[in-house]
Length: 589
Image (cartoon, rainbow, N blue to C red; front, side):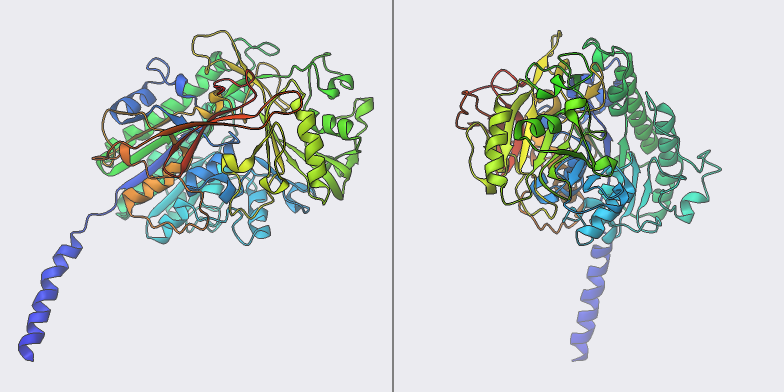
């Protein structure tokens, strides 16, 4: 008996060193260059991005998710789920009840930390209904930090304590009213690192704010994480080139150069410089050999057009006779359906559009403002239509028919629960029907795009947008390939070197891949999930890709909504969609 006990003790001692020598997970960093187009990355203006994709993995078949806007893709990047599961259906959502943080409006603009906190309160503590990669990482002992643009930074770990004790969150509000608390390990080193208490406000290009955030990252956060000795997970979300492409004034009123002028290029160079600073700091601090860096963009970009010859709104506008104004879709539907129009951003004021009245915030409530028949939420290159009442199916038919005849429209998608409609495809085709807690839109209307004068047509696309920005400035949101074609690349010890990946990937694939690398355990609720990008990992094999085109039945005027997509297993990748001849990059069957 004593012999057996001694033997057991020896056996246990024999295995302890083996367990102790288990390799520590590698660190992971997601670097988001907001609005960076794949074609913008060239060695002259963006040498650091070009170097990373050349030496690491170049994802040559990359995809943003629809709608091609920030918070939508932030939810996909950080959860690994498609939007039908996350419920982040656009940058602004209809939530069917008043939002205190939106002055009583039922429209929630998600690029706002206070709004995001209220969204979590409304929807059982987590409006996304999925845990993010960063929430899971901190629960498993990783050091975590999320740094950058207001909105997506909080989305990346929306359930973390607001005092900074669980995850460090630095954004536009740092040091200002509404900013998150900062842990003592961060504040004690701010003076020595020349990092001010207050974050600079954004600008075009956004150099001052970006430098501030990167100084905090390289001088305080990385050294602290290295000293802590634990694996870490970090997100750095650069506002540029997005803010510079939106805000460009290089050709107001004209399409050329649009987003490709000096402002847009300066914004792209700003993001590239920040990546270069980050990569240099990793090397200087001895972290480059143990850190995987995944670079992505939330979406692509186009130059804005406001022209239309068919929009009813132009008859009532003080704009030039063929130019639409912000909120024009709400005006159009009110006129077409003969319903009264109300502005939720102005305490539900009635809008006399016949006398030139406008929707100040773009969103509109049609019918009874307290119990609307139709809710219109603008989203740049697409608009969301909600039909909350029992007459939804009848209204949907009228709305689809109306949109099918408009020159600014290129494709309509309808909630599957409302049935099939000639000229429209179901939203489930875009993985927009899943386990979401937030109200699901009834209709997405996709706006037309066309090409400007350049060799790479994805780099000079122009599109109709429902936005307060002007012609010649930049925006995004539609299903053109110019907007789904984001930049994506990766480098680090777990990725192949010098590999151009021809397989389709999307922002929904990032979290599953990084979780596989690090051993972070995900706990999915919904079934609309991205895939592990196994072919890009060291030793990974090629995957089988299927290309498909689906189209709707024709509307009365013959138009069909067409969708080009690719598939790898259950993962879907949306190339382009719309009406034939009205979407850049769309190939009809």
